Image (tube, rainbow, N blue to C red; front, side, top):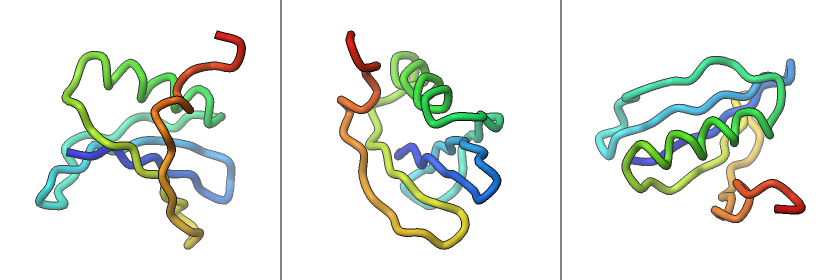
Length: 76
């Protein structure tokens, strides 16, 4: 299982839980900011299985990885 965080050209963020087979197991609602989306991912990771987080732009941008530390708000 991995969590894919997506962003589109109109500024919407969402995540999808993707199984090893490539099937989508769950999809979040749209969020207006990366921070709100990542907060939701952090909550999911507390309740769900350990899973790497992958960042993917839906409009053909590059892919990358975010470290777990990016889930922690600045100043915490």
